[in-house]
Image: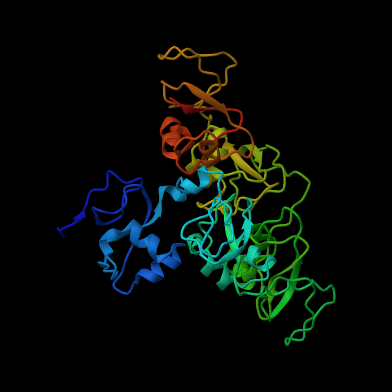
Length: 420
């Protein structure tokens, strides 16, 4: 065994897949196994970190970045949850050396000569912020190194969008006049920049559209969509009323199923509602209409079936659930299967061992010594619940194991524990 490294990872949030240094941060939640060609800078940038952060997570690499091929190195701390900072808790604002008052909270490190600030909102994207403030993406990332490659952009924190001596580029007024690119095909406007120059098929984004639903509807892969529309990022910068590219010269899209409003009678004699996705089992006897923001495992849990059963009966959605389409029906039971519902909904109160009345319904496995409860609402998230109740996310998962560490088992209308 190499000195300073450990094969055991019991102290970590997620076990490293291979050997990790004993001085790696204990609340590591994601790892990368390095090869002999990896470099610290590439690993940091590729995982949305600064080199300073990567070194802080992995002190064993030292200032010269000594990596050992085949070993595991940490690339995420505490599930990516922002650490508590002094600046976030205070209402005072520091005065930096440039004599310009810097609002708080900000992420550290923060450029010292900033003279223009922006308060990040939920669903903001780095490139959208940069574009709106007339600065380049490179400037934004260099002035705000703590955001990494935008993986650490935190809502309600200030970022720098201007420094002393820099003059922002005025934002271009969107033109409604179509342009004719070099490929001879008229490109409608507005589009986001940069825009691929050999596009021959366009789609006008509507409110509530999603990148993957647009890709699926136009018979292209998600990777192609993102490659042809780099300005959208990972869909954080998908702007309504702008055109995106959904086809290029020489590319033939894959045909997609056309939804219908009629029902068909399969061989099992049970009417199947439509639309459905291809490949659904023929002996289905219970259906569920997918709504926006549904997840495969959440649907399975609510219907009393296992995720494996759900994926087997609905193979088109894929085992990663990427092809789960809103407004389509999925199969949640087949002939001969009796779903098992693990949680009973009762309007009564239960009296646990600690003498405190527990409201219902609750999910299986909730800690028995809970003293504070919260009723989950639609669109709630595990991190948001933990953060608003000032508890550690890991404690929340420990007290409510049924929600799972990916939060896929968080059900609206159920009570969860938020204090013991």
